[in-house]
Length: 82
Image (cartoon, rainbow, N blue to C red; front, side, top):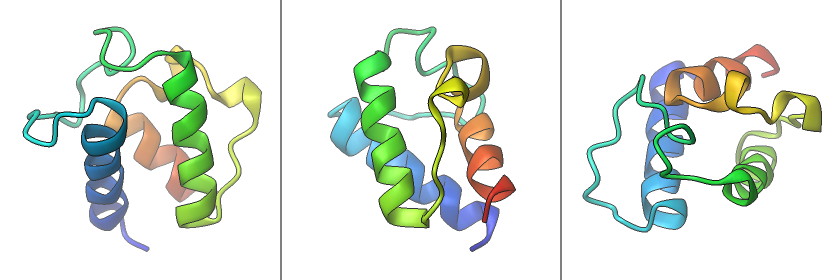
């Protein structure tokens, strides 16, 4: 799967299911957690989605603000293990 597909799949899931505002203009470099759009529970939900959607397991030590705060970071993490 290519980066564009991963990015748009994640963007859609985050805005629809976690932020619950599909019209939210989520940018690639926006701090999703640091800006209060998601909390740690939502990050855990995202990890489950990533595992189910992309067959990529993200271990707990990688589910941090430092490593998963932006869409760019999330996409890079998914592609790293594909």
